[in-house]
Image (tube, rainbow, N blue to C red; front, side, top):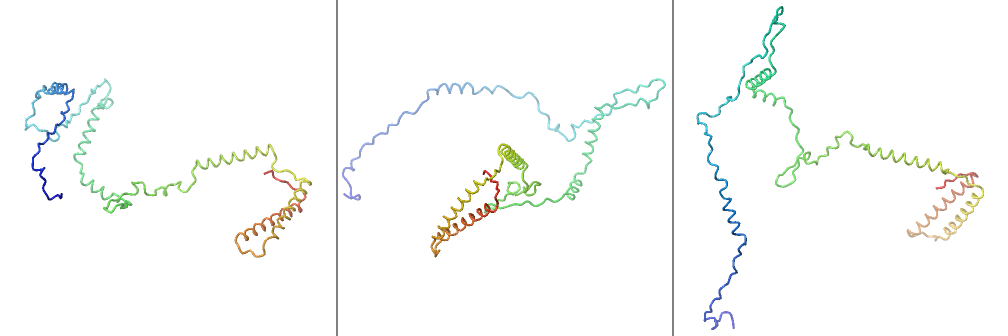
Length: 263
């Protein structure tokens, strides 16, 4: 049966089943919370109005009304003794009076001061600042100052630039002293060179000649054509070994007395 055709069973209306909702959640502490809220609701409503009367609109605060200029009054009396003059006993003002006088002079100076002329002189004498090295890092035009961001190589201008730090010099010096002390200690225990006897010298010569003969036979067995890299390397290695052995044999035959290092 297609969707466009009607069905008889849908003609009779069916009663809708009521949707039963679960009961709403009620907290156990709901009543106690309401009680506390009502009890603390009006605890700050008993302060009332302020008893201080505000000033009248005509008594507003005016300029220089709080500056009190106290008169200069000397505290010490001019006492004169018989046979003395007033020049020897002058009247000095107290420290408090001098302080108030100084403050009054400073205030009068600030009142009579011409700030406009001072600002003009400061601007004329001021050295113009150097332009900062800025770099734009986004396409929207955001710029950063390299010096403030820590990206400017200011360490080049330092006095110790390119010099070895003092702590590295100290470490190198201590290492050298330790090595020299170790060498002196080893030399004191055991001499660095030992004399090569005639028997040992003859034995060493025979061994070196035997090795030279074996290397020479191996060199003679090489192919005539060296057309690959391994052959060339082998030939050069054998030639170097033969030359080194020949030099050592010539030294041993030339000098009868020799000193050999243990290392």
